Image 1 (cartoon, rainbow, N blue to C red):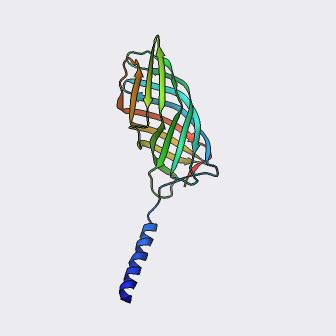
Image 2: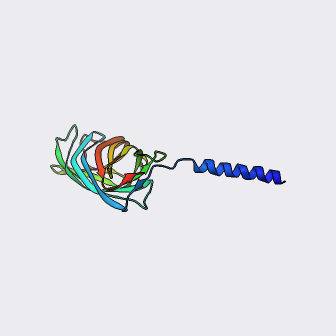
Image 3: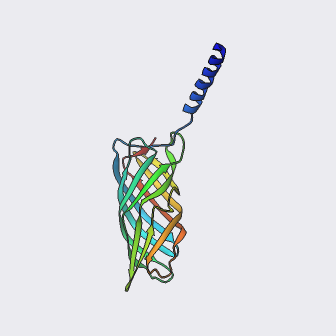
Length: 197
């Protein structure tokens, strides 16, 4: 009986050690729970529409620090233009966007892959003469999108975004544009005052 308990105890201890050795996902860490986010030129290709903005700005937030998840709020997109096969390049507005990022790289690292989920609908609106076109990227159908690469850059995180398989829906009249599940979004950004650990 004692020998059986000893063997069982050894197995439990060994299992606990093995479990604790499994690396956790890379985490975002900062002395604060929020900070500034800045982005350079970004482009979205969605069902025949090409949208380009010269820059964007917003903020990042962490529920706790460190955390493998974070929220990115893009509050303002600057100098946006849109075009399609039937729409010449026209000014466009790209509303505020809210995205949850989740680290998918295991272990302590200075570089991680991140999946993105839309938390708050992102709406692009453009007007041509008397018609208005709206392109929405909603939370539904846009969970854990690939791919974002996050890399430590001094005390900040540099982002390279190449999202694939983005689902868009249309509102109004959008000549030359169709809803799609294959939209892409590309751009670079910097999250200030936060790093990967």
